[in-house]
Structures are given as structure tokens and as C-alpha cells.
Image (cartoon, rainbow, N blue to C red; front, side, top):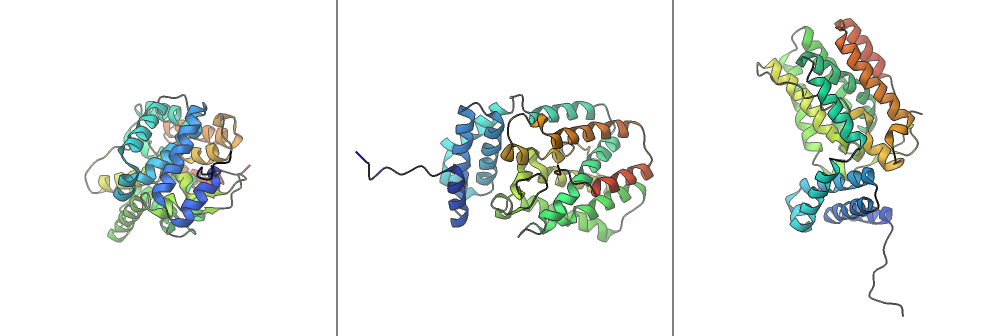
Length: 291
């Protein structure tokens, strides 16, 4: 007999869309959590990490959202993410591989390696900056140029303050609804790129960390670059969301992996600043998601 009181299960996309339309962020976080839990139980660790990390970002951004979900859900989400951090995922393995290489380099070398990744993310940021609340992403190119300049000659107080403001705005965006409930743009990779795809490998905070670290060095407070930004142009959340499976089999991902290790060899070769600048300009013209 048909149960009038049983709710029909909406498709995940419909559920997400409904929560976004109502600005129901606890509901949005719960929807992502349910999707991640289901993916984990179905043996799909890549998508499980994608969805659970999105849930974590949303409920971590607001005390009200966190409290609305309750500790049982948030603790289980965190525990599942911790378990998935041990899975043989590209996003886990590349971080470990980069950390190993960074331990063999000087801080300036690691910082240049990071700047080369930032150069490839600059066109992505420029395009995403047209979305509501994401204007700060259009400032990445200028920040990149100023940081490169600061290695060779002094930057002005105004330029220093500009980078500092961008750092603050990036940090704020990482907790803002413009990020976790923001829009999307057309993408050469096929499916549209969502601003929330930058959640992977904590891209926004990695950019902020690189820029803030350089400011601290300039202010006489040395702070080593941890290399966290270096893998971020892989944009793993985009590929996991739109393609899934073994990300290493995706041509654009393999091309980016080649660039990461090519940059490592380049940095180890002791390049001139002229060579660094040329490589950066080439990367600024690159569409990392193009087929």
C-alpha cells in the first residue's frame, strides 16, 4: 500500500538546487554529507572525499550551521575525511610527493615553484572573478607580479598593503556563501567550472598562505613556504565532480602533473629571474582545463 507519509527521495542534484534556492546551508551541508557517505559506502573514495570536504567547508564556516547539524554528523564527517586522507587518491599522493621534494629545496626555490602554479591559476581566477562576491580572484595576477618583483627590488607600501588586503579577502571568501553556494562559469573542460571546485586541496587558503608568507618575509618575519599551493592547479574537485574515476587517466590532469614536475626540474636548474618571468607569462596565457 502506498505510504502517504513517506517522503520521496529527490535526486542529489535536485536536493542541492533546492537548498541553494532557499539558502538552506545546514540542508546543503547535510546533502553533501549524505552524498559523500553514500559514495564512500559504494567504494568511490574520490567522490566521497569531494562531497564530505564540501560538507565540512560549509558547516565550518558558520557556528549556526555547525550547531544545526549537530556533533554526531560533523564528527562522523571529520572521521570519514580522516580515513579518506589515507586512501590512494591523487590528491593525497601528490601532496606527499611535493612535500618530499620541497624538503630538499631552499625556501626561495619552493616559493618560486609555488609562484609558477599561481601563474596557471591566474586565468582561472580572472574568469571566476566575474561571479558575485568573487572579485578578489581577479587580483591574483597583480599579486603574482608584485611577489616576483619583491624578490628583486623593494615594493612600495601601497603595493604591500594591496597584497595584504587580497590575503584578507581570500581568507574571508573561503568561509563565504559566495564560495560554497556560488556560481559557475563555462569551461573548456566541458562541464561548467564551479567556484566551489577550488575547495580541493584548500586552494584559496593555499594562495593566501603563499602571499602572506611572502609579506612576512618582507617584513623581517621569515616564514617558509610549505609548498601547499603547488598541486592546486590540478583542480581535482572539478575533475572528480565532472568525470570521476582515476584522475591520472584524464589528459588535462596528466598535463598538469607534467608541468608540476617540469617546474621542479626548472627550479632545481637555478633559473634566472628573466627565465622565471618568461615561464610565468607563458603560464598566464594557458587554459589548464582545455581539452
